Image (tube, rainbow, N blue to C red; front, side, top):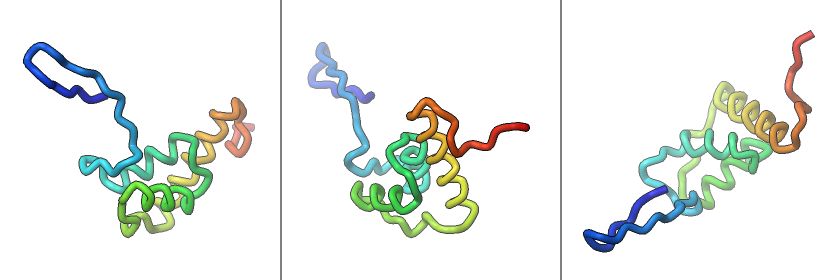
Length: 91
């Protein structure tokens, strides 16, 4: 939430969405946000959303990063569905 001040006595509260690139959030940070949101099922989905929001996807590479993002996507999707499908369970 950000605050917009129009005068000394009036403050308006506005909920900020991520439909437009936030210059304070890096592409990698936004990738993790998208992965955890449950709205993306794959790294390709994350990259497509980043591009749509105006981010460069040049930093979204590497096996370790892809594995982390994919694991977060799967966990978030499982939480959205109210199940633990796709999440390793202890024996």
